[in-house]
Amino acid sequence: MWISTAYAQDAAAGGATGMVMQLAPLILIFVVFYFLLIRPQQKKMKDHRAMLSQIKRGDKVVTAGGIVATIGKVTEGSDEIEAEIAPGVKVTLVRGTIGSVIRPQAANDKG
Image (cartoon, rainbow, N blue to C red; front, side, top):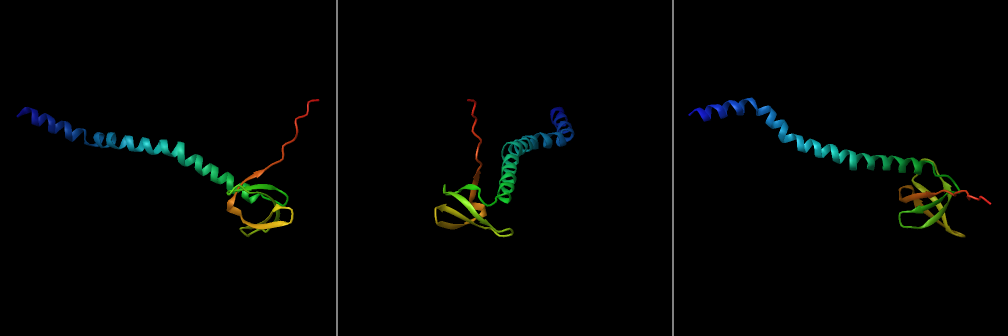
């Protein structure tokens, strides 16, 4: 008889706290996913878009398919880029299929 009254008082007082404690793991999981997966992916996409917007004539690029090409013609406002994959062989690439730009590195000559 007294135990059920005590239990009812405890349940009424701890209802809001119990709800927060049930949601806390879900919120924690979302925060971890955001900082470990979502945020780095958004940063990577932002950097890739910036790289694609800075492509200019003469750059060497690697496509998503692994083809190395030299950019020949870039039209602003268009997704298509003309590239040369071999001497005299020109192809049209879609800007989004370019995976990376190969930047020439200076030699580290220390004689």
